[in-house]
Length: 108
Image (tube, rainbow, N blue to C red; front, top):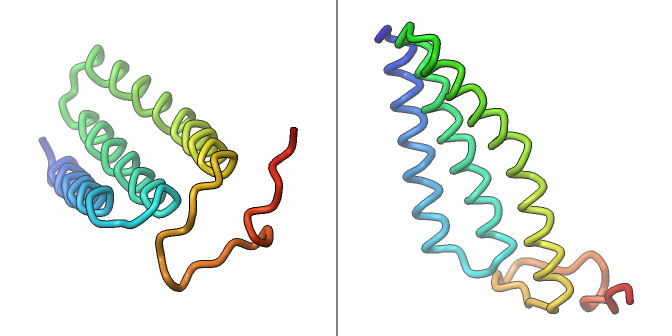
């Protein structure tokens, strides 16, 4: 594995560690979604490190998984955020505000 692959693995592990800490420490679902997206970037970085293996089957599988992760992560984050908004989940941070008003009535 080249130094680029090692660097991608280290960056991916650091991002995954920050994401795990964020999921445990952040107050509400909206902030935790941001931490989860950082974790998805970290996992994608680790998957891209497989390019250094030189094995075609591993590279193709890792690229397929990374592509799925990049496409599915925003969609699932949006679905979770919308479900939280429809359930009228409150903002846990003291400095946060709801730009829609006071959690405006959700659509029917």
